[in-house]
Image (cartoon, rainbow over all chains, first blue to last red; front, top):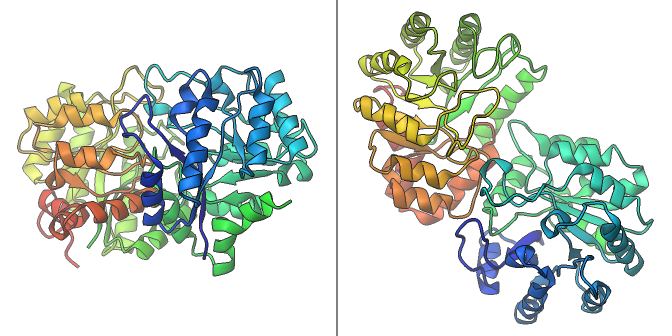
Length: 258
Length: 265
């Protein structure tokens, strides 16, 4: 059974010492939990003035390790961002990413609307993280706001072909977006499971029932988070093989083969 | 064996309509990952009739009674901490005596009073006299006040632990949010504080820092309200530790701080 982790990073982190994660480190860590393919963003670049400066590293990582698929950053407030997006599309990336609150952008402002529309026109999904760390433990200088649910609702309405991959969302966030969207809008959003609680609260089990298993994909937040957490969550669901495969690979393949 | 030193159950007098489902889910998941014993507490009525972290004496009794009922129902799977509010000293001491006499094996202090406050001393004397540990709710590096609780951090718990060297203290949920590195630094030399690994946090580097700071001999496995993250940390530790050390974390350390015979099956 194939397992795709759509939520991993290379690089370092400014607010906590996790070391410098290189491609080979990610390859080893995903193998530990049985992941065959990882979608990789550049963690350090999230904090750089030009977050797209990490993209070259991602492309190199893919060249050396085919199982690492690049999720390059696009900053729609920087001149030339369309060229960055076009290069990503030409390289057949599975998604591009933008974390507007970390870039100092309004989360559903004009720049983001333009980016979502451009991604929709090019038929490439846009990935956004709700958060990288628990709000309770963030460094005093890590002051960027979390991505709010209303921004996701507004952005998905911005273009009829837009597709969003939202990571690090909890139950309440997912519900507010899903049930605040039309069925067509909701079908164009895929959620990773890394921040959704398992038993005894059973948020993930509930969401699979209320929102639908098709809307979720395996993601871990590696290397800020132990990937074992998402694996444990899957195991605790006790799904049959077909349903488990939907979460580990099938849903994301279907989402990206539209 | 696998002992979860930080579990909670819900009760019908609490504010959650799904209390029975959540309790059943904890036991079911516990069976799946082979938790031998859930050492649990119930914090009053969980906010329904008085605040979760400032439970009224009436609610303290209601919560402890509900837990005693669960223990009676599952005597080989559930053990209990007597939850008390130290602002009501006489009531707290009587409740500790009542609950320990009824078979509970520890004392739970949440966030009704700061850990270094002298009001906690009589509670700790009672714990010492009865030979039970104190599980203390901790906010990992409290940089300001948080609503709904008078939260303590590890530095404050360390002050209490130094005043009561004969009492084992459990620093709650190192993965429960906040700056775990601050907590580890604060308790490094305080040997009667054990670190419970529970909490939803699964930060890369946290477990290595725990091992480097206090060692496997002072780590206790637990879940709090997310069994998935507890299991994840256990899986990761199983790769890091020797068989001896993983057994310490899974159950041997817990056996050493609870009264003899607490986990006899």
